[in-house]
Image: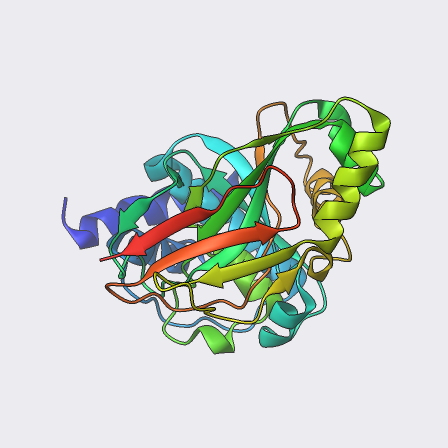
Length: 295
């Protein structure tokens, strides 16, 4: 199928989706044709033209249309990502609110992955963390301890996002939401189990808040200032509280087995060929480093 045929087919699906009421159209919500073009750039790993500034509602509308098309190519949703949960990253996109996107099967790769430095249109890497949902009761969590009670794994994670557009600095928060928060790839390390006793869980909560997260290169040199657990909404598990509430507004609930990406403990950094990156979680018992290399 030619690119023109693919764009036409995707635009037709997006129009049908909008007509079915899946994503209500607004003045600045990207049109079905624009979203089809955005999706084609995503699949081709080429930068897409920047689009007009989005409101929160417009960004949500565009995200719904975009994900409708991504699902045709990427398959099953395996989880969700909370983005812009770090105030330093929020400032980069002129917002004070987190955003969310979907994670698809095939996005999450094993520790030690070697990947092309040009793995996306606008590739980046960051120190992150995943948790795995144990119980649907997590949708009613109000505190980090509530979250801890309803997950069964904490997983060191280097996310490999793709900001997709020609000029990422022009994106605002809803614009980041519109591109599915740049979800592209990520490297998952060895899971940490959740302790059984209450006292051990309180100790784990404290460790998550106080841990120091470092990104180093193959020579052990810091690639950016170390982040802290508390850099994410005061406590990294608070990102799950926020995400569950945000998803409920769109009638989505977290389910057992879902993976949740909590956000960035580091700046968003550009990869380069020959670089190996290791994320280390100092002060978090049982956490082993996770590594990705770029070729």
